[in-house]
Length: 373
Image (cartoon, rainbow, N blue to C red; front, side, top):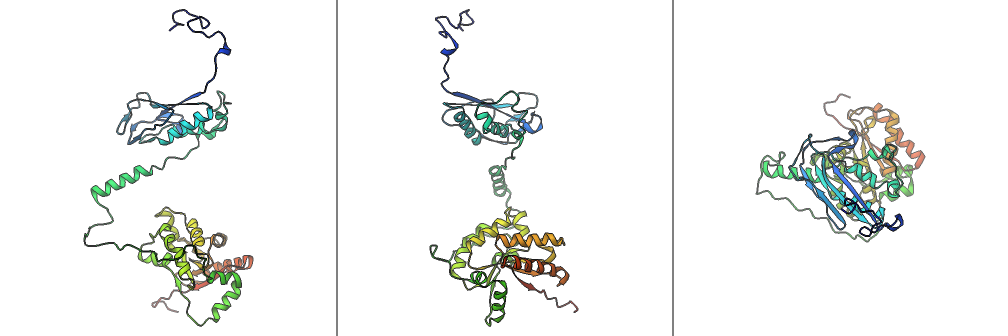
């Protein structure tokens, strides 16, 4: 107002006699959230905002337009949704405040520039204040970011659909049917693991262990609950979370079990495609929970855990990785008892035995009454 009235900065009314009189007391930072797509030359996106949650917090100022869940973003108007402003004593502090605020936003239905803004705010060059006008042009990493998984919206949508329309997998709801509440058997979580077959294999080595097993007169049992059994009874839908609930207690309460079949076969495929889990991580977690018991897998000869014949070098690498992640015992079979499919896999396991002194295998023959021998 004073300047518009003709006053100078040095006049009594404004009192800025020189540049040195201007002191920096902190930093203010503003990010403008828009519906622009940074990976598509910043072209504005448009459509309905299906989810909108705003941010808040100390030191955060929001200047929003007419944005809410259900709002329609037009391609013919300004794409800006909200301005997020923060101040702090340091530039790094202002960056952290704005990043925290943007992490609280949930905007679904249209693309936004928030991942791009976040990449700028966390970039070391920007935080040091060393950026130039060519910073964005010379920093392609700013345009690399993961798409949001949108888990909460998907979950709420699914629950709403089930509540209104029912579950497609449950055709009829019988109120007289009651689920049995599973009870995990008691065990001492602080007790050491009793010695088991895994310890014996480690002490004897594969060859001596195989000889010991041949000389045994008693029957040794393999528990297939975590692999073959739930494949047949529960359509392979048993989660790693559920297995780990009982794994430690089982290993401590039943150290005399010969082996636990926990991996391979169709459960490998279903673990990834239907349960969205990492089968290798499952194996590692079960190995940690049951260190005293032999862990066993089913491998379909040259088919591995897939549904086609794979090259020998691929099967060899798979056997190696399986051993490194925790498999002790490989149960090798072919659906037609074809030795040409089984033999290479046996050799791969024996090679692991020679290299590492741990691999061990069993042959599994499937019997068909109708088959002519």
